[in-house]
Image (tube, rainbow over all chains, first blue to last red; front, side, top):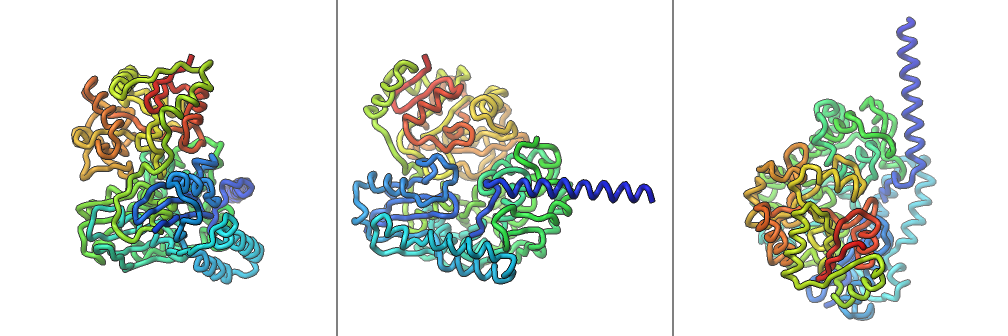
Length: 36
Length: 546
């Protein structure tokens, strides 16, 4: 139970970190790709 | 017949002047604006082309536009219609952009009122690749991000006729897949792909191969990319979504973050996947056309590692000097085979150079030498491990410096690559440099099937004598030089060879970090002064800092 909880928290933290990175990338103009 | 070829508003805007089927001048807009891969209307490149041809805009009989904007607009709205609400804002943005970029209006604003011919995006690539090849019959394979609808085409060229035999449409795009992973790895899409290619040999492809494979449903001629991992159809921002990093179990890299083994492994897997798909397409091209020659076009034809694999199915492979959208400005104009040199840009006389040098006389010392003395002296300096800025004749067209706007160095010293990467070009240490070699000497140093005049194939090195020109996997992106192609550079290579028995030079584009390739003598001198390049050669002038 405790192990599972740690796992879930770890995954949640990781997800948060990844999302932060994507938000950061969105702000940066050179990373915008024109598909039209 | 005077034609003006234009590619604009996507990336690598360029213009060219074609008179009676002969390409007289061509240049990319980025060289004039200093903005890498500039996508704006190439007004400066057009001005240069007209000046070079000594003609006025009114003399142009036909403007050849490298793609069909109406067809492209149709594709964009068709894709947006899949998600009308999600793409509502983007639809307005696209509408505004298409209106502003209407070729008729833009051309009218510069005073052109004549005929405009629109050529399919991939047909422009096909034309440029096939009509500049030496073949009378060939398969033509074009791979890029996206044109109007198509992302990949296979055509058959016979004489001056080209017939399309197969195509794959958006969103199933190998080019966009490569760009997506490029941005995932923290490099700019449409620019950093060659960095990913350079990074790949440092990695282990097996770690991410199966994961990347999950992006596909089918492969090769039935290429199908699962869109659930990408945002191409509804966003013009980050090209991937959270499903991709969940699949890879790796966070996207920000540009300022260090490159770690995970990134190298992902780059290696991507390159392996690309090569697998490329081979499928090459095989399909062979089956559909039954020819022994292959022409490659589209931005993906810069993938020199994959290009070399085409020899598995074809005896001869031609890749033009600017296979991406810049070359399409020329391709849109061509209707038959034409010999085109890559040296199509501005040229400067000794008198003009001297005038510029006079402005810097308090900072520079310069000597005007005869061609023979200049070559001897430069070769001596190169052999003494000096780094030379080399500026001669007309500027190259395309992404590669082919010996007219180059930084040259000797590849014999193992530290030279690091010196060039870190001190001169201030770029990532993993990136390799290309060696130039006289055509007749090439087989002594490299395992080659054919000449590679435009540095667009990667081959195995045969020697340990040129460590700085050899990548970590013992490969080299070679340029073979002939006297006909570039006489002075050819003589310099031989002179260097005469002194040390290795007629090979490291050749990298004449620019510093994040700059475009040098356009004129003034720019060359400024860059020389702000860098640690040891000597500069412009035409007949040998220049050193005071």
